[in-house]
Image 1 (spheres, rainbow, N blue to C red):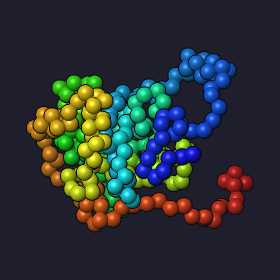
Image 2 (image 1 turned 180 degrees about the horizontal axis):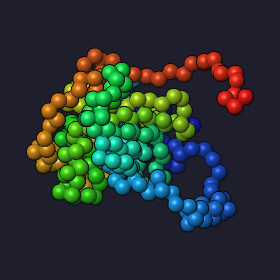
Image 3 (image 1 turned 90 degrees about the horizontal axis):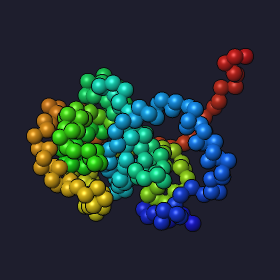
Length: 242
């Protein structure tokens, strides 16, 4: 039975239902790893841990693990997992763009994005096990970026499979609804033997963006989130090749 809303069971209870991996499947997977390049996956060069809030229900907050592939200096694409261990489940995707790219987006599109300045400056965004002095240039760059994160698997409500439409996620912010629960932060900090408060102090010199577009973090200005609904629609009846 799935856990109640807002709770998760033990690791053995909340994995997807299914039979254990067969020997044949294991051999096939190992063989494919040796023969195939898996080039897109190998472009993931960073692991980042932070937190996110559901746009439609911001009291729900989750720890997230980004595996980041930087396409160029202005664009990153991230596979988002619930944990960094070998049983981690792919729960969504986030795209990260520079402020320059963000300013070219239509206003209606900008509403779906969030800023990263507070997440970086507050010490919530961390590169586990990588010294701060090594990641400082990256943090300075990321503080000026915007992200759009779709969660496709709501594990925090006990879903053992990815159910329903994707949920838009928001980043933590220094206002009432945007504050991350202290218990979540402490649990993460204990795992990696770090102090978010100490990181916040160390990052004080990271420059704030000169301007954060108010279309981002839309809920802060307007008190409204976004939710996706699924509705039937008419299909095109003719195939493109007929």
